[in-house]
Image (cartoon, rainbow, N blue to C red; front, side, top):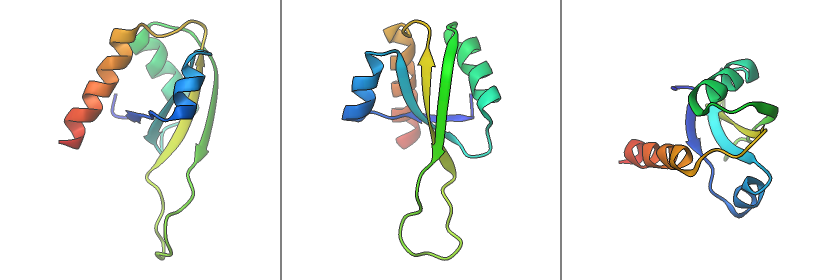
Length: 96
């Protein structure tokens, strides 16, 4: 579970959720195969597709790289709300 950092809650991600697409930040070293395996194991749903991209650098610091990448996961069926709320609660605990 340490590959998933936190879910993204923006207007776009909320709109995508109606299409069974969930957006999250993951560690930059994790592969799509690892993330797919983890999501299928943890949530018990089948992953249909995954898109990932690295976010652009911030500022003009030399050698600064982002330590995470953003991934959009398309599922066969929606995640039950309590499971997704667990991720939000996990994020709040990490921030405190």
